[in-house]
Amino acid sequence: MTLDPVFLARIQFAFTVGFHFIFPALSVGLALLLAAFETLALRKGGDAYAELGRRFGKLLAITFVVGVATGITMEFQFGTNWAQYSRFVGDIFGAPLAAEALLAFFVESTFLGLYMFGRGRISKRLQWFSALMVACGATMSAFWIIAANSWQQTPAGYVFNPATGRAELTSFLQAVFNPSTLIRFLHTMDALLICGCFFVAGVAAYWLLRDRNSLVARKALRLAMIVGLIASVLELFPFGHEHARQVGVHQPEKLAAFEGLFEGGPNAPLTVMGIPTNDRIIGAVRVPYLLSMLVHFRPSGIVHGLNEYPPEDRPPVVLPFAAFHVMVSLGMLFILVTAFGAYRLRGGRLYEDTWFLRLLIFAIPLPVIAAEAGWIVAEVGRQPWIVYHLLRTKDAVSASVSAGEILFSLILFFAIYALLFVLYVYLICRAVKEAAAESTAMPSELQSDPRSKI
Image 1 (cartoon, rainbow, N blue to C red):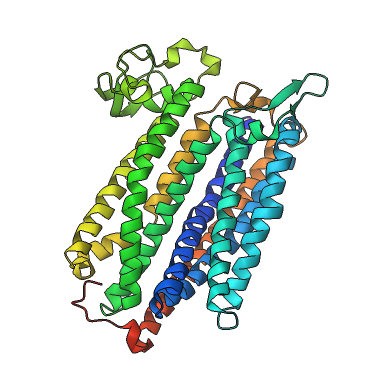
Image 2 (spheres, rainbow, N blue to C red; image 1 turned 90 degrees about the vertical axis):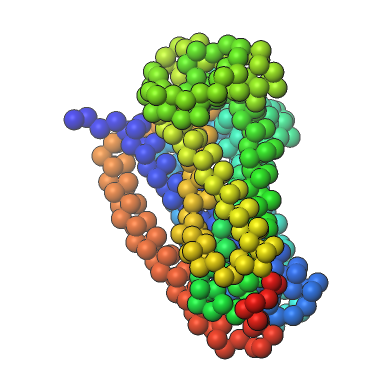
């Protein structure tokens, strides 16, 4: 059997990026909530929110360090496995990636160090400011990465130079704020906030199962449920809906792939479920006219189908269709879970629902899985193009790297990342358990009447 270097290079990049994405998904959301904890600590006083900052700051630091380590490995692949791609996009990607590394990452890492090691040594205002800057740095980092990736989806602000075979930058603003950047940024940031909310909710639920009197855990769970509900609703509408509309306008093949739409036209149906193949959806359950309504706000709106495109230009269907429906299904579940939590919170019974607290613990990885599914939709749905309608994936690999070398490094990465993931889970669990053990020694103001509604 002959090994395909293009396929192996894609598998390696998908694996390393997919593994790396776990940690930004958690760290960005945690950074935003950490800023909220410190803001509440500064405005309302008391020790509960400050204690939340201390506890979740430690969890954020662990996540951030592992994310940095896995991100470096991912970036090296541009020069090893994807030399032709790097050559083609180098003039475009240089500025946003430099901004992410020199500005956003520098701000995030510097102030995270100040936040972690300055506690008790700096003023409360500076403590709050450092948490705020960590959140700002994480947000800026996400923006620049999304802007660069969005250019691959909807290229703008460039000209192609046939003499050099490169895309050359003509407008920095047009390249950064290409047609998909802003909606993808909002959609992604809201998804990362949901990841952070479910992480905080699951950890707080564990603490409550260990100590129902913990005011720290109650305040964390309360904030996570309220913010999580708002973010989950926003993720469905307007962010998710508007992003799907943007894809329908600028990347119609991708929309057709994740909807399993082969025959386009007006009155296009929405596929609720089915078993995907690359030429049909088996047992499809469809809602007539709904896809046209969602994309164009009228049933007569035309939605293009896959059969309108040459076979060599069509994206695969199975992965985008499955990943999209997993993402949407989980998104609906997040709304239900957080809405139930908010309902029980209003009645003052949230902290006593043992079964629900256990559910929140098991739900911690679900938003990360949804975010990974969304990444699969975006990247696999763009195929066969690595830069949409400009550069095919098969033409972007390095000619000098053999399939055997890629396979060896892929196996090595898998082994190292498996160990790294086990270590990460161990460190997080240990930190969470240590915090739970500390609860029994908390000052009286951090304990509460278990009947309190907070």
